[in-house]
Length: 295
Image (cartoon, rainbow, N blue to C red; front, side, top):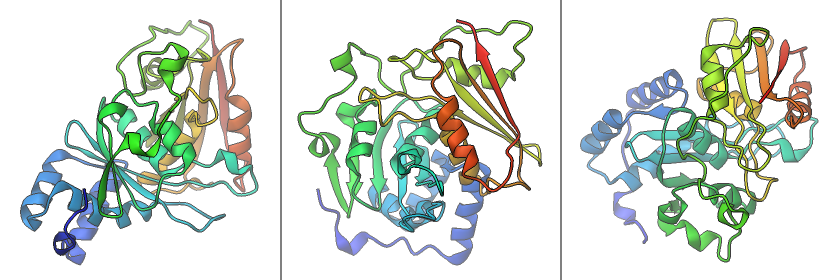
């Protein structure tokens, strides 16, 4: 379905743009349903037109020193909240380590408690990697993609797909679950990090893993390991946590970072190498703590 070109303008004032940006940074890239409803009423536009108008703000969060190509994505949750995302690149490291805009938006929704994504708006066509990543969503059969003012069913982007059901997995990403993992006395992690560890999506390797970033101003950001049936598009917890930090308007640098903690499962851990590679892409020694848990 093609959107009418006569209704693709929201007429945001400079003050309104600043207000939206401030709210996004406060909520790590999330606009609550109440704000969305207000914007729809004020500008008398559909949700699809609003998403299109907001995409440049999503792209502004991109960190793309290699490609200089800024991708913005916005996921509309079942709650009515909007979750922003943007691509994140790491200099002097393998290109396979980058976080794609669609991954950022989906992870943002997941980390903030969303269990369904209705549609994803993107300012550039999704690459094959992202199509495979989105195919892991539990809600993929109803997922819509908004691209170039046109609405598509996601399945049109990935015909004859390979997905979780091919590997006997009937859950899908965003499905609610807890692994029931607890810590012994010698394994001290925050209660919030433990919650994210228990919510990690690891149906293939079973390496429960999550990451915590503490900043010098007292803020904390989290990421969870999200596996994919095709393996390669799996999302590492550190990249997810850095994305949340970037969406809050911060930079990952010496002045900001106090401590990064990675927790994963002993004997089947698989995240330390990618975590180390990402941290080494920065120009300072990142304080880092690696904790292995027993199943």
